[in-house]
Length: 203
Image (tube, rainbow, N blue to C red; front, side):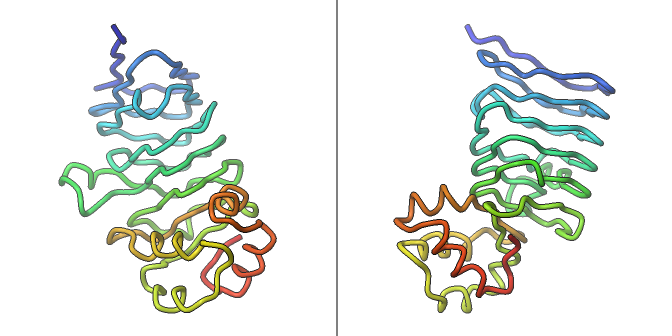
């Protein structure tokens, strides 16, 4: 039987917290990690964010951490390292009310690799993004018409449709060029040439 490990109703400060494989980790309710290094080796199915805060922590993904919805958690002053794919950060207005307690501010992703990761309802001026070969669409919902008229290499226009049809509250989405190019039948160089013509892209 897979063990369940609960982090709840406490403050964990100045510790190295390892989340290895072969367990299910419940983050919350009412947990605060402060000045911790949190090393995540478990897959997303073994990670259950409930509610809590990460303050001035380093969050390190040992493998590629896929499809985690961090909406119930609030990150402030944290640094992210490793590979994250399909992760959502920030509170979601389209989900149950308790998820509004989440959020993200003053965080640094410059040492992370993000692919298909979204940011919700946050001030992106406080977020340090990873640069090329990662790139970020800023407020793509508002610029959907212009992005739709742009010429994209390969089948990258299918990614544009996903970016522009993101849920309400999405303020940015970040992708990894080499991964996107391989999946969309193009090259990173062709993709960069197209992206350089778009003013709402950070890379």
